[in-house]
Length: 293
Image (cartoon, rainbow, N blue to C red):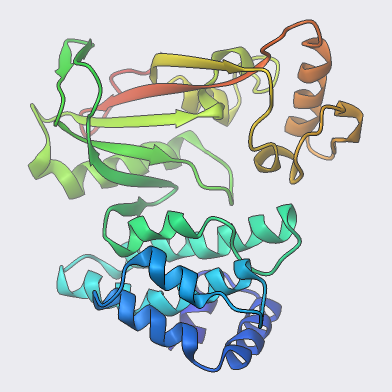
């Protein structure tokens, strides 16, 4: 059953071979812990900690734990009448995180195991290209395009997973799917989507992301409500597959975006805080992005 799922979410034959090797090495301990967690017998943090041993790297153990939890999540989706497509889309994130770990850490595993607790608690869902945390607005009231967002109002926290282009039509389709799923929770028929990401940082639009690029178009869906500037490039592995040690000449320039980002870094040598991120808000009425610039 699990191997069939792994094929569905994009695991290669080599990935599945590695998974089977480590699962056999583990001897069933992690599978039992996954069952305990998913049936409420132990907390997520405790189960993850107990899954670690000297048999394999902790990132590998984390990957196995997440995979073993997956079939239990499928049953939760079935019980709540949520389409299986939503479940498969969510579990595709396992493959994304595996690939990131192999690139950034050189390990068959995941190094973001805490991220998956949201999925297993049904607090994170995927609609097409984008992922969303199911939450409430927890900042000061703000009025955007005539819509006042108040504390405790339903909203979605958007996350952009790796693993493909960020095409505008895919994003809008994702908004529509999320709107339809959560329409009974919306105030005045408006879906509020909040996102905090380096992709939204205004100084990157132009130098790093050309004005007509998919990422720039995506960023312009948002009304920016906060900007943050830093003197260091945090999470450089997301961009370059390796961390940035301060020497731009060591960074790969094998894609257009990476090349432009290195050029941006070099052009910003006199700027003490050239890096950053931003928080933005989308208002979506079921058909149109009302905040689009």
